[in-house]
View 1 (tube, each protein chain N blue to C red):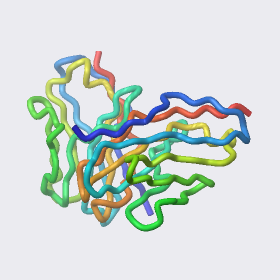
View 2: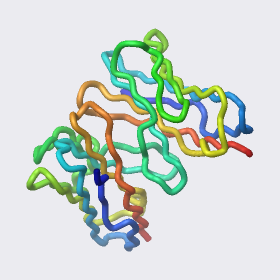
View 3: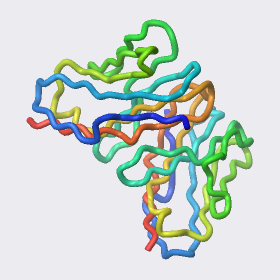
View 4: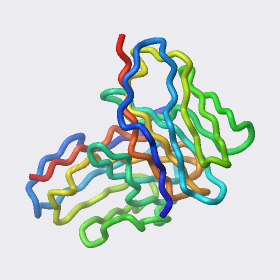
Length: 113
Length: 112
């Protein structure tokens, strides 16, 4: 069974630029999550999708972050414009059912200069 | 606010020593509890989980955790650690089907 795929693995941008991350969950997993993991901290949930609907985006900074999952499969997370404090690893995870084990991708390490 | 606390930031042990990593949470209702591990250069992966039933849960690689409801705790244990257990360990809690919260993590270093 293929795992959660993410790209790119690394990204370096300058502040005020925009960036997008892509995630492909495990086949058949209806629930998809995006997390932000700042160095030295645990993952923080940004947004949770159930199929193509948003379940929880209470911790997503909506003035600069957006995410979509148009066909209930792949998802993209965008930051526009980026700030220095957005430097982190962005993790995608999927699960089925939603309350059970989450399977994580390798993450995208973002550095904002 | 709902939170998950891991007491130790960095633990250093020698091989064959016993391990206990603390985890406390502040949720008041029914919770699902998880321990995830991240080995160097690898993805986060599940070590063990508790949903209901026997509060002593056994996971992979000889790890176990005990849910003590009265103490809001879910501590991770292993009787004898190995060098290959060197990793970062995260406790996580959710209520129902969303709002997964992770602790800050405990970095375990096992000296050979």
